[in-house]
Image (cartoon, rainbow, N blue to C red; front, side, top):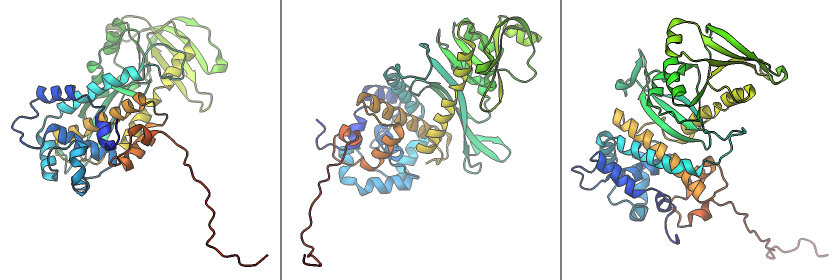
Length: 389
């Protein structure tokens, strides 16, 4: 079926074109556009992500070098860096933000049965943010300190995958806790957050929506112990208590009981104090749930290393957000391909393979499936014997 087609065009077959066109129409992306369409813009930026291009000049040089193949890659116009720069500058970044959300809705069911290493059927989300540093002289709109600039990537990550469910790009001054206002709590799900999200009023909204949260207590946290449960101290647990808040404003914001668990890591000796509104899971399971939050840190590290979101092709806010959202779209698209083709390789390996095979005319499954080379030993008889035996 894919005989003779370029690998790049086979990848784009997994893109839901009907939803993409609806995203473009929603924000009038084709308004007064004659040649360089939004799809051409997406293909150019996706090519840059998959081949690790560093600048608009790199994109232009590489695509013009393979100009006879551009039509078969899906392009319908000639590529010029000024045209691409103007498109990134002016076309609404929300087109690609909505496209990323469409791809996320496709990817999440594919990873619903992934193992997170815990005997838990509920959905587990990790919430955190990472700051992408920018040059203040080039990005003055992103100032957040006297000599620094940056944007913040707020993420809700489904730990079965991991697939980002909700992403919000803001200026770096925005506090993490405001991201909780963007979340629609899912009943029965667990939300694992660090101390930066400890706002009792917002967490009480999660409790009222029948969702569970796991977070850490701040130093000097005041409480009143209501009950205690026995714990096995050989596992690292030190206490499992039911508590009530004492301070006036926290008590007004969260009038219900909380569960306080003290845990000491047996390897490092570090002491943790967890707060949760779940009273049914074992105390050790709550500690292990918080330990799973580290996956979102690995996710941020991964995308910063393997996606083009540290060196930007434009300096405006619209261009930066466009590049970030297209990078996320490419990441989720590759994750969809991995599941639908049942590829038993890591996303890192798949991206590395695709970076050198995009212009090959080979079926995508053949490119991504590991095979053992068939090398036959050939006897060379051209060499004359040195000694006659």
